[in-house]
Amino acid sequence: MMKCVFVTVGTTSFDELIERMSAQESLRIFKSLGYSRLTLQIGRGTVVPEPFSTESFTLDVYRYKDSLQEDLQRADLVISHAGAGSCLETLEKGKPLVVVVNEKLMNNHQLQLAKQLHKEGHFFCCTCSSSLRH
Image (cartoon, rainbow, N blue to C red):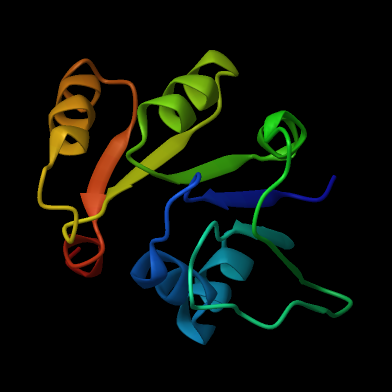
């Protein structure tokens, strides 16, 4: 079975997350964890990684789809912006979820939701800067 990581930013843009996820270093980590596919849903982002496919790894990139259901269903790990819709949809499907809070969105209601769900033990929560610290 192909193990798949799905990254979603919803209808917003979160260039920092897309940049971080598509970096060679991240791809190396995904591969070492046994993943062979990374799907990036980039929304309005200006960072547009180049899709590629090799024998061992595939990178898919798209802006929007009518529904993310299929990608969520296929994913073994979901990395999402802190939008309520994306988070709850992912949790409903029982998928492992890492929520990355966009620190550039200053009205951080997202952070409140993320902290609450994180406290309740639903998923792992971080920011792009904190994800570098081990």
